[in-house]
Length: 242
Image (cartoon, one colour):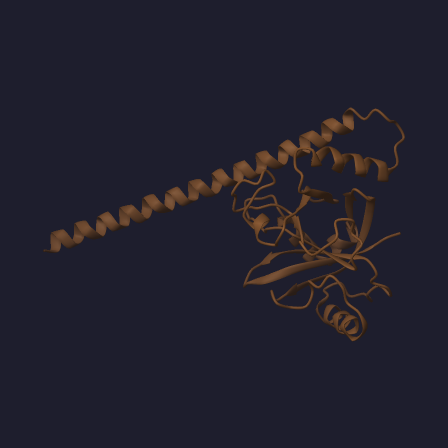
């Protein structure tokens, strides 16, 4: 009886080991697929820049041409985001909800690393008061992992800008807030008016690790969000620089 019990336990442990190895293998396979997909898009942009036929284009013209070219292959791409001194140099897609691109790649293939995506409620021309952009925090790399560098105020002072390319041209945003938030906190509204705006300003000021006053006007700003340990969210907010 003891021998049978021992063998049963051994079989169960073996099955657990095999399943765990399978899951680990699938995770890294998904990671490679994600990297390859992103590198393919980045290479397309680099080729386009090398083949630029109109010299002395403005940043706005270059931005529009970049997105127009990408949309031919990836119709959900609405923008491109880049942050200095990080690996974040990715397209931004928008789905019909905020779930699809959590688990699908830019090629619309199932992938746990998802894609960087804009909130489905936002206008793609960045005309909302608050445009929200999401990305996973994957330890193996890619996505929005590098946002955690901004938890160091000294790093923010060295790289304070977020660059956005879209069909309306090139936009630059200056970071004014970095903080941790609970998932249901009020940092993901597309618009704040009246008392809601005052409450939002007080909320950000209380949590902001950047010890400086908030911008006087928050007409157009962006919110970058990624996961943080303990079911928290790392939030980075930046206001448009004219």
